[in-house]
Length: 123
Image (cartoon, one colour):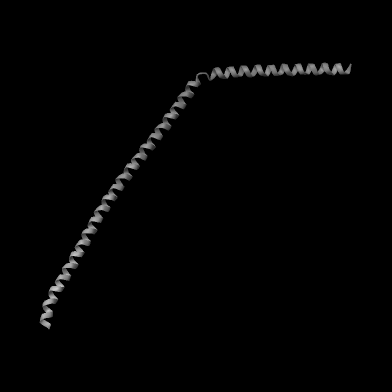
């Protein structure tokens, strides 16, 4: 008898719990539907915000690429100027070395020309 009463009470308790769970589930479903209906139009807003965000990001990326290209062009111009300056400096150095060699030869010849008659006079 006690076992059947305990089983009966457990069954009633189980039915109460199941009923409460059904009510909670129904309340959650109603809440979901009301929230979904309230946010139904916001999907377009969300898509617009995402689209604008991507456009801004692509714009910033484009500006960075453009700025990077300008940096590369400036670097190439500077390298060309350095190459040209280096070529000018090399040409100036070669000219100076040639002038120094010609001067040395001239002085050597003049020294020889001056000493040769002097040797005849001094002897």
